[in-house]
Image (tube, rainbow, N blue to C red; front, top):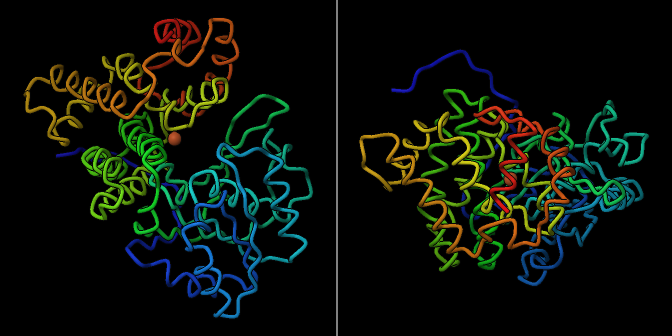
Length: 385
Ligand SMILES: [Fe+2]
């Protein structure tokens, strides 16, 4: 039985989950605004015909839709600035972001900063947001970041060579609409990268110093669903059952991390992903086995529980079960094409100062189960090289 200490949960959006729920999007928008800005990515939604269907559904409900299309993976600040410009020119009063984590992060930033007087980079540098945000509806088309339920937007500032998050309750979506059917056409590479991010987020929120009774329940369920379905979704993208597990798992991991926060994988994944041009999930998958090894002395019991939940180990000894989870994660990441070392992605020791400086400032690093010093990080990165 889990022990119940005092706990506090971060605010959460209203959540709608289930196959086919996208068909009711207009009903949910109607209560929030009349002129939605629809934020989408680089064409997969349009190519599949889903975007046209969504737009005509919204238009049929007398909503004046403006589309802001073309959000890139790992989005930069100027994309948010452009989107905000389009929103202002068209007097949009609600933002709907339909896409992967990048699209949702951009949509959330546009909505939260819609009426702010400053330039977008100022808020990325920490300027306080004071204006009322526009309502946001977040609709994921990948099973990854859980951005639909978090008050975080991860954005890159090319001027500062920095990928970092804006973290503010005003970024929290009003509604998260999660329809697993939208993920059926996601290609294997994107399925793997997003799925690894979700799985790592589940494991990191489970072992985080911010974890509590309820986030543990969500994280454990997420670990089970994501861990048991990721391979199937990767090899058989049209398996709806696997896609449902992935969608629900990433949603639960997002709910857990919104309160529990994350750990060292996420502290390092942003600077490393930026430095070596890696997809976020790829960076997370590469880091996870090393961070597990680093955290083993503190998180062994939880790793062992996760191993048992996944059916990887029935060892009664925590050390053996935790080690089994470590080995399983290493095999999974290798099978999904994730690099095994920093050397493989072109890293050099010369980059370490910058990576360490960024990782030490990260809230994720601060929530890692085992405390982290600069010296620890240097040793850690050398081992990864
Ligand atoms: Fe992540």
